[in-house]
Image (cartoon, rainbow, N blue to C red):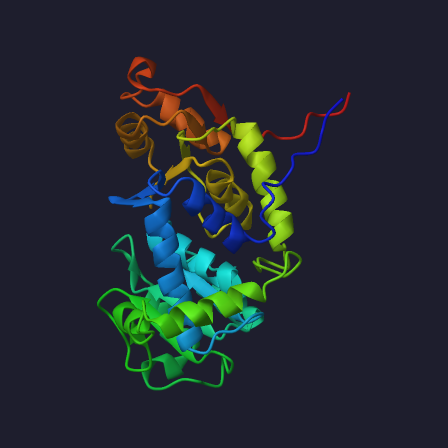
Length: 311
């Protein structure tokens, strides 16, 4: 007989992160692209970002687009939105211009957090300004009329946008007023509130936490484990994987680019015990000239399998 995975008792994603920071403050929570954050550090960053969102007028139910690759900033923004009841809208910076415009139009986002460039070859800002010219001068515009703030991580900041540092700095992070505002907003979030919008899917806090519990069980991760996720954060299905970490006090390890050689280096350096990726990428990794299982600490891996053909 099988049993349904149970949640950890936290009613919302913000509460789940707070619970993890209380239980395991000095346990590593995230390793990505040279950034290492403990649960205490991640939670502090989330609260500062939540204060910045509130300072820029984001409220419960508002939609906030995140147009970035995998990074600590992406994860912090996601948790910050969840903490105050806003809805994160993951946007793939690599998609075609028409798809990018459709995604932003349909999202009705009030704030957009974006990188200026991705992988030093994709000019994200140019693509966004082509969609909404007001980003180059002053928002709101006519194409995305609800968008009032664009925060840019990088050097190329149009006149109608803010640098990410200014976005964060205007919140006066760390003041008593900001802490109180974040706590009040967090208290108003409900388990059935929508936390994510992705191509029509609108999962709730409770739903994603149940998925995270199931993912943690499938991965077999335990407290102190380090598991590597090779899923882009902008894919809604990957969110359950990243939420599996605070479920049990594990550390999520990921990279901005999923290249077999780099994955092997990170898996060895971080002593990851589990890897989650699609089957082709796992095949490429195990077929790579640098693959040496004796240098890895892997005990398990997880990849979605195609349905078994009917007989």
